Every structure is written in C-alpha cells, then in structure tokens.
Length: 112
Length: 108
Image (tube, rainbow over all chains, first blue to last red; front, side, top):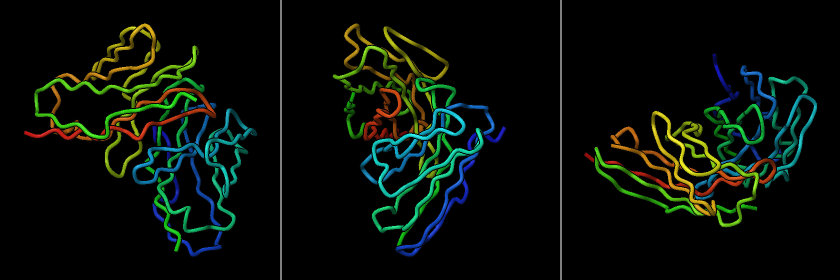
C-alpha cells in the first residue's frame, strides 16, 4: 500500500503562474483534506472533501481551488500564485471526519 | 472552535516518561482528541485518539479528565527517535484545529 501520495514533491513558481498539486490515496477513504504548514503556524486546513464530487472550504481557502472527480484523487489548484502561498502543502485522507488522518509527505512550493 | 494550546517545547532524556498536555477549553460534545507526531520533511503520523478517560496503545497513553478541557499524551521511556513535533487535534471539518505543536527533544 502506498497510502497517500503527493505529486510533485518540490516546485518553484513565479508570481502569477498557475499549477495543480495532486493527491492520491489507495485506502478507499471518503474524506480528503489539503493543509498548508508555515513556520510557527502549525497546519491550517485549506479545503476538504467528504466524498467523490464534493468539496468544502476550510480555514484558509482564499487563492485556492480544489476538485475531487474521482474518490481516490484530490487536486489543489493555484490559479495565480502569490509569494504568500509559499509553504509546505500536505494532503491527508480518513474514513470519516473524526477518524485518524493519513498524511502524505508534502509538497514544498516556493513562489518567487 | 476548539482552539488548542500546547507548550512550545520540551526536553527529556532517554528512558524517561514524557507527558505533553494540550488545553482545549471550547471542545464540543462530539469532538474527539487526536495526537500526531511529525518528523522533519514528513507528514504528521497518527499516534492515538480518545474521547474520554484513558486510552492506551503500543506506543502511548492518552489521559482525558472528566471535563475534557485538556488532554495529556504520555510517552513511556522515550528514545532519541522520539525527537519530533507533537500536535493535538480537536474537532471535525471544517473546524479542524491543529495546535502549533510541541517540539520534543530527547537527549542521551
């Protein structure tokens, strides 16, 4: 089992560019999440999904969009990247909202 | 929202028991308390989860008092490999609030 796989692991963007981060899980989990982690800030929830075809906003959704067309995949998009979006992005999945989450190893994104 | 508060850092020596307390004064009736461990350049990893009283697994114990306004993660006989950041998480989506974490440093 691969668990939760994030692609890419590293990326450098210029301000204004767009990109999509991919998260894939092979545990048949219903819930999937995107977090960002900044120094001294812990993890903050960006968007989440409670099942295929559903998405919802988390604590810090501005500047991001998400899609969950297939149960196993959860995509995070940045339409026009800004330096403030430089961060480490983590994807996670779980069976339910209260169930323990399984995390990927993160995508380190730098925006110049 | 059940905001969580943890000590920023703790130091310990190998073989000692370590207790990390998380405060969550506004915890909701249905909220569970979950603890995660994070190593550098890795995603958080689940350690233990509980709702009330005491929960124990092969790596840790979780103590939750009756009022559930705090919880204590207990790591028995820590080793150098337990050096990591520990987070407590309370709530369910969208109110998933990770604390800022406690950096545990274990020395020999």
